[in-house]
Image (spheres, rainbow, N blue to C red):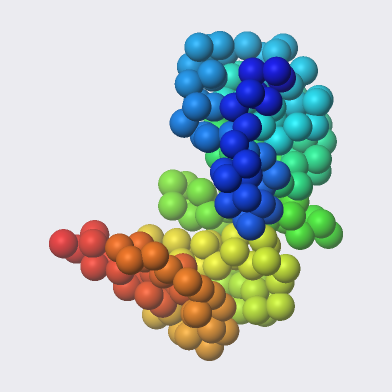
Length: 213
């Protein structure tokens, strides 16, 4: 904890806090600490219990994803209110563990929109890698009905799912683009030069163009 405190940079914290991430540690330096520590599951659990954002990010880098119990991950998800912690927990831990599908189903319609966004993120992973058994038209129905008025984090996750359905499944592409055009979600999101807009119609067209190129 002292080492993490020493890595704190006020300028980095100022930038991160604009995105809701309350830490000031350069992620490259954090990854260097994790590389030195290697995998240490019990230390990861202790770091998580501190509640400190930088410590939790480090915990997610040095943990053993398959060592967590299903209920433990559910508790961690409900504690993970910081966007970067939430994102890493889903992508670095839950997706790599044996409970991903069970938690996807449990979280998908959770009344907490932040938890539900994790369910949608896991669903998006399946849209791309294992779509068998998913009701893609049904997902599009849910997105069409609920995305426009969804809270930010849930809206972002639903929009990502919409885009991936359009990118990966040509038979649903025109409907996905049409939903994006009607709802106009993230149409005016500021996008850096060289980056793809998160507005689904633009995102879908660009990724399909790259695939064909």
